[in-house]
Image 1 (cartoon, helix red, strand yellow):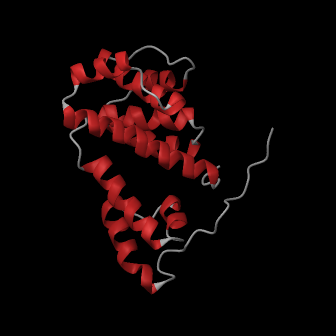
Image 2 (cartoon, helix red, strand yellow; image 1 turned 135 degrees about the horizontal axis):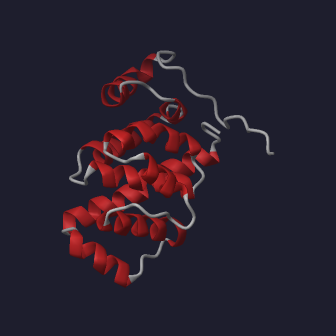
Image 3 (cartoon, helix red, strand yellow; image 1 turned 60 degrees about the vertical axis):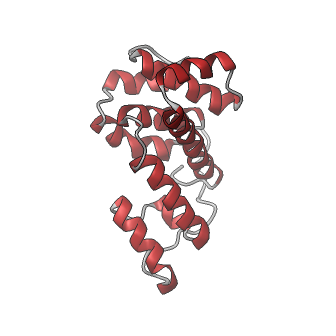
Length: 176
């Protein structure tokens, strides 16, 4: 068994730098706390600020159904081996109606059963974007049968954004 690696950059303790107070206050207001992820991001104030704005839009300001959003986040976390992200989103997934059988199926390889057709379609898109980057035309055509232009952009952006999140977490050993 491989030993857990230490986080690769020091977390910034909230309240330790007065210059960061406005960013920390925005993060606190949106997230309820300054999580370990944001403590790492605070090493770069512009990145922390932009990240918070983008992820707030993705999580809280789109029209994407909460169950679809959380299934995307969990599947990306599984595919990218981002345990911290998976664990952080299980409560959100449960609140969005994801049950224990679906939580187990999302971890399966290949993807398990128990999803509604639109959920499975969204998960197929998530797998394609995360594994291959290139989305086959036939799959995108199916997506666009269920989502209008805004919905398609929000769906694709959610997959892309959480790939960004999980890849940062894994690269910097946050929560591993």
